[in-house]
Structure formats: structure tokens, C-alpha cells
Length: 197
Image (cartoon, rainbow, N blue to C red):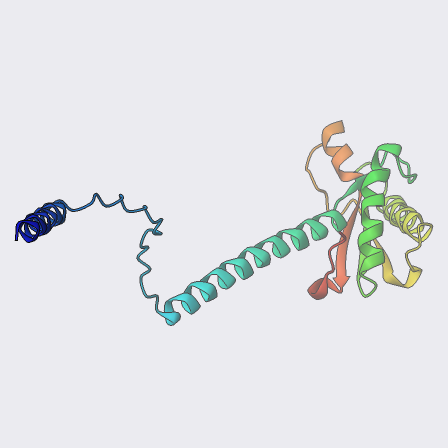
């Protein structure tokens, strides 16, 4: 009986010790942090709004392109229309006027349907007959210059106005210098100009 008391006591102690162990929970490890991407709010976009924005952008681009094209065509017309000047009683192309003629060549080459008229003018010194002949020679000299650079003869008309259409009124060298000239005008092909690049 003594042994069984001991056994009972030992069992009781074990039970108390076990109960005591159960009352203290074992420490739990800290949770491992998880990288969660931030939530991004994406508003629902109306497809009609996207299409409208794209159309507006395309319209702006087309308008910009049309303005650039109109500016380039105006520049081409101005280059063709650039006047050249002559010395007193001369019909030779002056060295300082060759660049203006040379600038016309690539435009005329690219625009094979373009035709031009060259009008020769003079100052008011000399007779009407002399000045008409001098104006004609000036226009013809400018034409020969362009023909020598590959422009077809049939695409260039010439006319003389002599002293009849002065660019500037006056009886001084400034006015006379502005009146001794050849003017260029597009007479065909102006509605479909190609711009040299």
C-alpha cells in the first residue's frame, strides 16, 4: 500500500507538472512579412473618349502637315518668282544673280509640268524700240541660262515690256537699277507643285 501511495503521488506530481506545462504556451515565431504590391486604382476609360482623342490628335497632325506643305509651296513659288537684275545697257547674267537662277533649276526639274514666263524690263533711258529689244534680250539670256542647265526650251516663254512697267518710279540710279530686270511667273503647273527635299 505504501508503494501504491508513492505511485499515486508520483502520478499526481506528473499530472500537476504536465498541467503546469500546458498553461504556458510556447512562444510562436514572428510572421514573415510578405511583399504585397500596392493597389493601383485604374479608372475605367470610355473607348469613345480614347477614339475621340486619337481623332483630335490625327486632325492636329494633318493641320500641321498642311501648314508645313503650304509654307513649302509658297517658298517654291517665291524662288521661281525671284527677280534678277542687270547692269545698264547689258543683257548678260551678272555673277551675283546666278544663284537666283540656279535655285530655280531643281524646282523646274522636279516639276516637269511647270511652265514659266520670263519678262524682260529696262529703265526709262533709251527709245521705246531699243528698250523693247533690250528687254527681250534680257529675258532670252535668262532662258538660255536655264536651258543650259537642263530645262526644256518649250517650258519657258519670253516677253519684253521694255520700260513700260517700272518696278520703281524715278530718274536716279536706285530706280533705274530696280527697273533693269527679268521677272519670272509660273504660267502652268502651279496647282500641283512638288517640293524639292
